[in-house]
Length: 436
Ligand code: FES
Ligand SMILES: [Fe+2]
Image 1 (cartoon, rainbow, N blue to C red):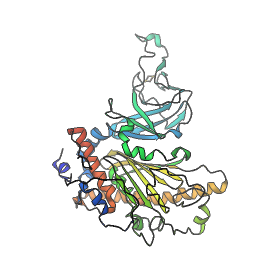
Image 2: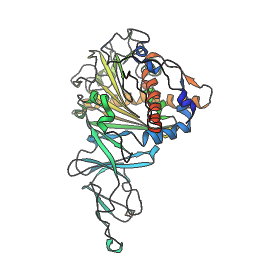
Image 3: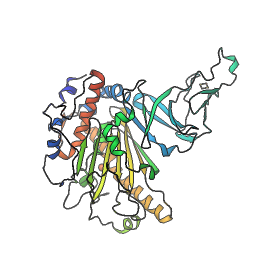
Image 4: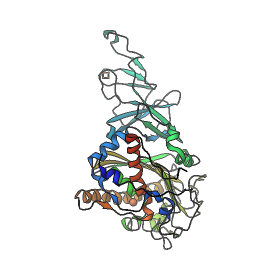
């Protein structure tokens, strides 16, 4: 591994850290550095965004070892429902299927006969049996081989024996995760740690999956994650789509209320614009559907203890980042997942799933569609920037980037990736926190 990876790790004295209470978003220009001094303040190397060596390390020590979110249980509500998730960086195709016992199980999507890809479609429903298109072998939802056409011509009875290869699969608060490590070192609950506890009270399952965007991008996955981890850019990049949704005259740069880091994960709490006045058509759409711009309408859900931890009455949104590649964006009444799936050091799939209340009337449907398009416009602004940034970094003109205090999540992202690689490769893991 390059010495640059090691050199990027800051080493500064630690102080004990507590979850913050609500604080004035203008207080202390370096307040997050004061809370997390071990992250340092220096420029950050661009090497992890352009290097094949980093990509290979991420493949071996992160994506083949960590718990990875692949979908939510509401995508497969009935026994026999299934979906397929491709994990390109690990060259894995996984089928997730709900059994007759309602347990969600994951299997490598590979037939045990001659290795055909078992399920070819993205999602579907079955009678709790999956059949291979090549020679018709049939597996049940527990992965057991149940039927082999012309089976007596084989030299042994393979039924119940040549079963699908299981993948470690676990569910947390309706989020399905898989772990490609044959022997995971942590349970999903241990892996999620305190960040998982923060998710516990939020009623995710009351707001169903409504639609799905995905975009193949010529950009490193971490660069895409960075752009969804700070609000600094909103005033500029989203001046057309969201000019005053999250920024406001007394908080023009969208400073946060609380940024809480864990060793791998992070949870942030930001205000919205309590003065926001939708205009024209937007005014008609809002109030008919929970949306990214919702503030107080009938769709707003209780947040529990872990989300909107400052209990801000002008709450805009929280981001729960689950390492390595999942951001859960939680807003009043709606929630989204953003995922960034590496394909190479400069290609990734950006997958966005939108959970909103179901529309019960045509006007609610109108509100939902309006918000879907508004979100698309903002995401196109982000997407174009990801690719331009990757292009610019690949010119080699700069070696480091500069981060300000409110970009704490971006700084933590590079730190956490490096820590995970070191921990799995070298058996050494630093902590953000005092160990005394
Ligand atoms: S490869 Fe699946 S039945 Fe032959
Ligand atoms: Fe953005």
